[in-house]
Image 1 (tube, rainbow, N blue to C red):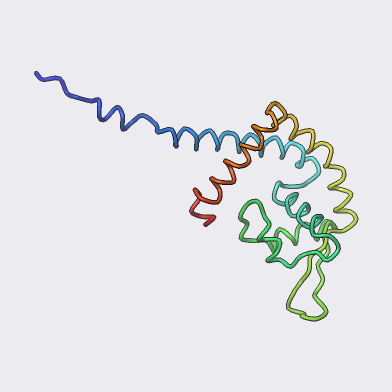
Image 2 (image 1 turned 45 degrees about the horizontal axis):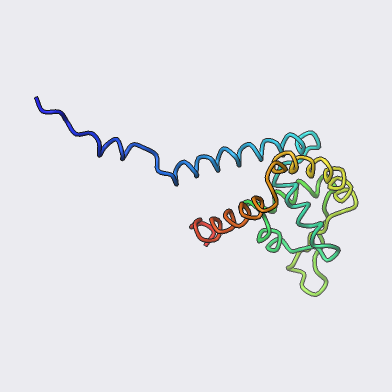
Length: 159
C-alpha cells in the first residue's frame, strides 16, 4: 500500500504567523482589560464609563455632544445614550441643551466625576507602569506605531 502524502495538509493545519499574532493580541487585550477592571469595578465603573469620563475631562468646560463622545471612544458602543444615562444618574456628568440649537445636547463632566478620575489617576498610572514599564522607550514607541498601523490599515471595521 502506498504511503499517503500528508505534508501539504500538515502545512495547512499549522497556524500562520498572522494567526499567532492575532491570538497573542487577544490574550494581551483580555489581560489588560481585566487588570483595569480590577481597579474600576470597586468604584462602580466599567472600562467604557471610565473612557467617557476621560473624554469629557479632556474636552474641558465646553463638553461634547453625543456624537463627539462617540467619535473619541476607544471601543464601539452603539448605545451611548444609555451609557450617559448611567453616568448622569450617579452625578458624574451633566447634560444640557445648547442655547442656540435646542436639538444639540452638551455633556460635561461634573465635580464628582472629576474627583473620581483624580482618585483613579495614580492607580491607573501605576497599572500602566506595571503592564508596560519593562519595555524600553524605543520599544514602546515601536509597539505604539505598529498597533496604530494595524488599526488604521489592517482593521476593515476601522477603515
